[in-house]
Image 1 (tube, helix red, strand yellow):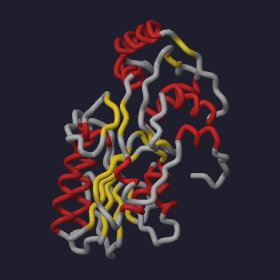
Image 2: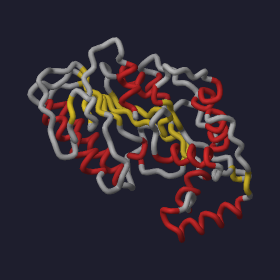
Image 3: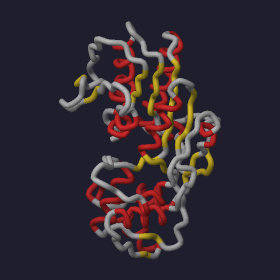
Length: 285
């Protein structure tokens, strides 16, 4: 989903795209193949990835290796890798910054960290400026995962606020990830990305509800939601709520992204305000 925002950010440049769909300039599954590039690129932004436990290593690590091997004869000047805050392996904490040791606990987080480590060696040996971006939850058209589940739940009427829940989550808009990628590319470094506001789950849900037509979200007591989560655990993947999803909704997990703002002129939008106030048009991505 990030690709379209990156292309829009670079709309004043010649952009070559690589992906699975036939409308890309290079069609290739990096998990098991290597593209045959016929030119040298100034900047490569690697945003391809999978969050699935089943193929995270193949796509995120092996895909990165295959891409780099395809670039080895004509390496770019700059390489930007879209990683993830999941490399820290932390489920609940506030203000996590880049000095926090990476200790991933999922195949996705592990594959992203190993890709970072491989790129550090490859870029160093090929004299390429490497930038690693670790975004929090990314909001934008085509999003998947936790945010998509929330949107579907609100739209279909089975998402509820939890009484007394003041948990906060870091988030960032896809257009700001794309902007950060372009600005940081010639500089290099490893940086977290958030919108610097860390909205409560309640406020974020209300902003999404406004964006999709003013849907009303009702509030349930915690005991009722706990019961629903327990039933969801019994039902498995068929249920909209589980203990794991409930934990994500009721625990605070925020990241510090001050470091990148000290290096580039980057002022991300407040995502919740953007959802409530942006006047969307047909030209919006």
